[in-house]
Amino acid sequence: MDLARLIFTSRTPLAKETRDIENHYHLARIAKSTQQALDFQALSLCLQAKHASELDRLNWTGHQDVARSLDGLGSKLDNLASLSVDIRHSIQEMSSVLHEDLVSLADLILQQQESIERVFVRLGKPYETSAREIRAEADKWLQRGMTREGSDRTDNWNDALRLFKCCTENPIGSQDYFVHFQIGWLKWKLIGSEGEAEASFDRARRLSQDEDVEWNRRCLRHLAYMRYLRADFDGAYDSAYQSLVLERDPLTLFDAARYAARLGRTSTALSLLEEAVRVMPSLMVKMLDEEDFLE
Amino acid sequence: MRASVEALRDRLTEEEKERCKAILRVIAEMLTPARHSLVDLHLEPPPFPYSEGELLKMLDEIPRGDYIGLVGQRRALLAAIAQFEESLLQALSGELSKLNADSQRINSEVKKLEVAQIHEWDLAERQHKQRLSELNKQISETGSNLTFDPDLGCGFGCHYLLTIPLYIVLHPFGLLLRSAARMPIQEQLDREMLSFEAESIRRGTQYRAKVDARHEELLTVQTRRELITETSQRLAEGNRLRKDSLDRILLPLPAGKAKLTLLGPLHPPHS
Image (cartoon, chains in turn cyan, orange):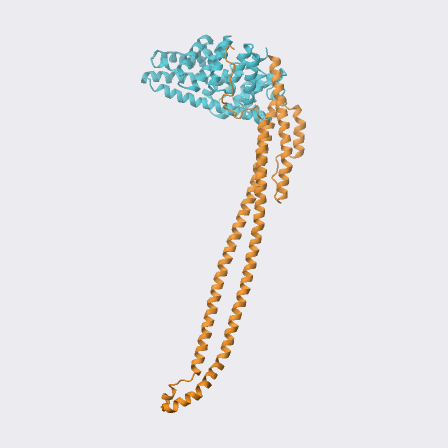
């Protein structure tokens, strides 16, 4: 399965499309192995490295190799899967640090997958049989849509959204943060309505509070991004900050730095960036390819 | 912001460069004395993954390195130090266990010698006693054969009146004869005593020499063991100091990689 083709909406993804927050959830739902997740991460990093190198911001001795590996990416989109393997090899040759970072990211993705399955089963228990069936059906069409392209994806996701909404009519379903998170994600990716997505993520955040720290962080991180997309940078930073209080993971530190930068809080952004890069050196590449830091 | 981000990139890269240089200095300070310690003990020092030339090349290449490359280099250098220290202590502990095995072997050899010696002495003593008792028996048998029996006369049917004067006349003669017959056996007895004493002394000397040789060997082993223990303690102390200086070099870096604890207060929202 060619994950890059399924996750990137355009043939030549823009820098912001390669942001972790943009594709992590999708990747977590469809990656079948660490290797697949690692290949996708390597490709994403290469795209960022190429972009940063073109802008001459990345003082990276190996960037020419990456750029060479990526030459004609657009025309080779059909062979992205095999290309990503080549790129992964070239990245491995470049530095074990990048490889380590990518492996830890890939592991993180697979852990997310496990937590999704766990919470799906756990929260499904109080439902009546028919409601549980609707919920399972909704999730099936969400996942199926993630592995399809074009109108098949749109139709599958529309079905999934309709079914998830049915779940919320059930008294138990209306308190199910898993369901609200899926609705939020579909409203963002399918309908493109960041406002509605924000409301759903916010409700999922509230419901998961004191229930599940990991999901609460995931909801907060997505909520922050929706607010960012709606140019509510204060709200975005606030949500990212709350997530960092729960755990200072490098990816959320990086997000918070972006929001702080948008707010014009340069010193806060730099200190968050520094902390993130020290834990995950590959974020240096993302940092130099992030439009939020370059304006 | 753009300029600040690029300045951050340069600062982090510069810091990483300095860190690598500091680590290379730690390596330079560590390698020679550690190797010499082992050479002094006639042990093969473990190889270091980088030759002196390679380390110098690394130092030369650092100024044109990039941040990620430098982080990789730092990790590789730290891993090399840890590996070298481990091999060093392993070499010493290997030697120590060899010496422990040696001293155990020597002690058990001494014990075996002792047991063998006791056994040998027991056997020799038994043989000697047996020989002595045989000789004593011979002596007593010889004496009684030659002793004039006062009842002999009755056997001949002689009258007591005749027997008593004869006894008086012949008894000293009998004693003389008995004594003459005992003489060679007594000499044999004396020789036996002398030979036993000589054999005992010979065996005792041999045993002492063997035990002394073992003790000398044990002393050599113990001295070497003390030397090795002292060296390993010195090297372990060196490792601890080196770890301290590496910790100082790496101070601003977080210990973990994937998960972080709360390192310090964040700027609160809306601040």
